[in-house]
Structure formats: structure tokens, C-alpha cells
Image (cartoon, rainbow, N blue to C red):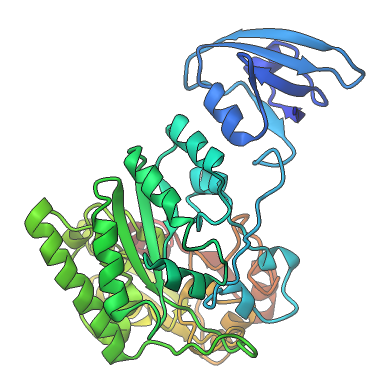
Amino acid sequence: MSVKISGVAPDSIAHKKRISAGEEVISINGKEINDVLDYRFYLNDRKLRLVLKHPKGGSKLVIIHKDESDDIGLEFETYLMDKQHSCKNKCVFCFIDQLPKGLRDSLYFKDDDARLSFLFGNYITLTNLSDAEVQRIIDMHISPVNISVHTMNPELRVKMMLNPHAGESLRHLYHLAEAGVAINTQLVLCPGLNDGKELEFSLRELFKLYPSVMSIAAVPVGLTDHRKGLYPLKPYTPETAGEVIDIIDRCNAEFKAEHGETIAYAADEFYIKAERPIPPTEYYNGFPQLENGVGMWALLREEFMQALDECTVTERDRSVSLVTGKAAYPLIKELAEAAMKKIKGLNVKVIMAENRLFGSMITVSGLLCGEDIAYAAENAGELGEELMIPPNCLRSEGDMFLDDMTPEQLSQRLGVKITQTGGSGDELLSSMLGGN
């Protein structure tokens, strides 16, 4: 197999070696290139012998000398260099199955690709992996690998993922751990299915794979209003959310007594639902599961308050609005009030937007769409000189909400400037102040 080059970066090593778009990479140092993992791994050598195929036929050898970390400047049609692997599971809690109709096609694609775990930190279920692919991860020293475990009970895993291979695929987890591959894991918890005693069992089984298993995140199932015909799941209540926290705390205490640290964490949503205080930043041991919503509150509060303490601004004539989801509203309001108390003339109105697209049980700011924000802002009164939106509610290109509304369209509708806040506490304070 070979991979077609779609472009060559100007002034790059490849450009200087007269490599052209349209040529195909056949091998690097005698190793066949099939996808991005092959390419990235074999590109690390200091001396490269690239065999390239010309579009009109024939091949040529290009020899390159470079530093290990240097990229040579080749571009490909897709970042994976071949087709993305789709998910073969039918999980009872799958969020994509709960999406409303009419959204853009890309939102309905379910990926389950180990290469995306390496490139972007995506979580994989292991059901898509062959023994050969697992061995390739080991041979290439790819770490960490992020794995959606959900349960360590093979029979229950089959039931929850509706895939007959879901239980036996746990062997890949053991194989990776035995080989010393660093692993982050997540458990999407569903009341009455994989919490309670099943959660205790899963935690203790994963603890046995330490230190390869570096972290375990317990995340509550997300339930939208679009579940017709799907498995009957219940949301967490304050009582059941508290039980999850208690189980994790109890298992962590046993683990810490033996190993001197903890690796299991409940997502912030559990503490919010249980109406319990968020643990301090020290609890999260470097925040290995931040992208899973574990420790985000604690880190944002600490960063913001530290930035506010160090801020030399004492007066700012500025009136703005900031919209957020239901879950983060209490924290964002607390931070805004702290800033207004210290800085004379600053007025930050915090607006809570309910999720009208997915339903009231979806409370995170990252799933707010343009219509949700517009509706909340239109009913909030005076917005001031600008409306700030959460850092994670636009797609990665920063140009579109989940419902395809653009920030420009939102701005025109509301008649106010739209800005996106940064994700850290100091960036949030800077946004409130309009830049320091």
C-alpha cells in the first residue's frame, strides 16, 4: 500500500528535496507506510530513505538527514491517511443515538479509532482492535492510550455495549497493561447497571493493572430528550450521585493505603448533582482526566482567583454579559462577583442558558447551541458592550455552533459583539476585563 501526498509545505525539507504533491509514499527505511501511525513512527529516524511513486509510474529514492523531532513537511488528504474506523458497538448510553434529527452529518459519525486516541486523545472501546493492531501499539511505544472500559465485568460489558465481542476484547486491556503501555480509562456510569457493586468490582480490577492504568474517570450518562425506542435509562439523583462518590472515595482509600496515591475520580457533574463541595486541586494529581470533566471546576476556580489576586487593575469602566450552562452557572457567577468586588466599575452579567436542543438534563456549556444562547440572551435584558460565550461551544474551527449558527449570525441577531472566552481561569478574567 502507498499514501498519496496532497501537498508539500513551502521551505520544508520535502520541498527542498523536490518532493511533489501527487507522488505517493511507498516506504520509509524499508517499512511500508499504510497510515498515520506508520508514518509518524518511522519518520522519527535521523536518516530516512523514502521510496516514492510518481503519478505517471516509476519510483524514486529520496535520502533525508534530519533531527529526530523534525517534520519533513508532507501533507496528506486526511490526517489518518486512510479511512477513519467507525464504532461497531450499539451502547445503551450512546450519546450520538440520542441526537435530534437535522444536525450536520459529521455529528452522527461514531468513531472508534485507536489512531485518534494517539493523535487527539479520543477514547476507544477496544472492540475494533485486532491482536495485530494491539501489538503494533506496543511495538511503537504509543502512550497513553485512552480506553472506554465502562465495566470490567465481561458479561455486563456485552449487555451495555450490545456487541458480542465487548467482553472478550478486555483481553487487549490486559495485554497493553502487561506491556507497560500507559492507559487512561473511563467508565460511563448508568444508574442500576454498572454502578454500585459493579463499580466497586471495576475499580478493583483496574487497580490491579496499576501502574499501567494511570487514571480512572467515572462519568455520568448523558440523557437527552430524544431517547424514543432506546434502552430505558434513568438520570442520577442527588442520592445516587452521592453513592458513586462514596464508592470511589472508599476504594481510593484502600488503594492509597497500598500505593500512596489515588487514581480514580468522579466527574464534577457527580459533585454538582449530589450538592457536595468540589475537592481541592491537590485531589486531582495533575488533572489526568480534565477533558472528561474531572477537576475542571477546581482548576478554573484556582486559576481565576490566583489571576484576580495578582491583577493590578483596580478600576475598569466595562459592562458585559457572559453566558454559560446550568451546571457551571453557580461557579461562573461566583467568579464574576469576585471580580466585580475587586474591580470598581466592572459589571459582568452572568446568564444561564438552558439546553433547548438536547433537553434540560444536558447542563454542560459545551453542548449549548446558537439558538440556546440566543434565546437566553434575548430574555436577559441589557447585554452591555459584548456577550461572551463559553470556550467549548464552537467546533474546533471556531466558526459554528452545533446547530450550524455562526457567531456572526448570533451577533447580528442580538445586536451585540460576540467573543469567546478562553478555557483557563486567567483567560476568563482577561475576557471579563476586555484584555489587561
